[in-house]
Length: 384
Image 1 (cartoon, rainbow, N blue to C red):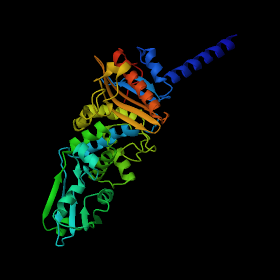
Image 2: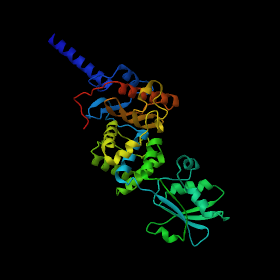
Image 3: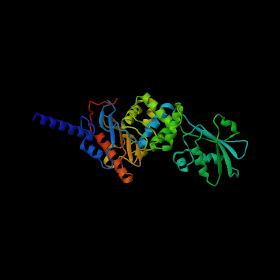
């Protein structure tokens, strides 16, 4: 009989443990069932979630918060933080074109300006440094159909896009100036130049509108400034070094890129949450916090948090993430007396837009419910 009771007790303990694991770690003041209804939304499909009270670092809710996930564009929090940590955010970049001693040869010089583009759409949308305009300035008043452009401080991919922008109207031979050669030695006089906005404005644009190219460029500028090679390995070594300096847990972190486009990117909600804590408190990272989209009001969140989640409008500052099978959101949610730091990532959503929208709406409702609920964090677990 005693043995039977022991088996029953063991079974009940196991049952409760399994139930807790399935529901995640709950707060002492449990979140309402409506929160769990949205958490278990079939379109969201079992996300990893970590929510922490910023005031005391206590965990409010944890469901697989240490699990490595493909973060989509929430990885831009890392990219922007790395740029803000090591670069002077007041920096501007100049891109200029010069004449040479040959009428059909020009020299294009930049200091690795992340703001350059050959896309008219991007030029008009963000007033970007437009490389085709510099070329037009250089050949104005001539009948040139073929030119050579020596270039320095500009990526080859940008030169390739520049050539495509002119098509058959102008044939451009692009030649990279060899390392060790002073590019100004290949110039006679400046024809035209364009200056970028300050780096802090680029960080703001990158986070508000989730600019993939800009995220990659900002990260690589930071990697180079940090003394690492501008390679995938260099990017990871640099990022781990800087996160370590901040005291952020980077276990399992891997960056295949700095934009989040790659499904090979790996980061846990815990790493994102710990970084968000630093973004909120480190003076150098204030620009990252200030640049986050606001729920229902700006950036990639302007069309979110409406309808049943409208109570959270203006109360969430967060970075969105979306790829073929991922929806994610990581940032801050402000209640009356509390501020919560959170990361929510699902890698198992449908690629259909309507179903992804349903998954995003479930996340929005979860956060709206969190904000409306007086959640007291449990005492056993504290985020280190």
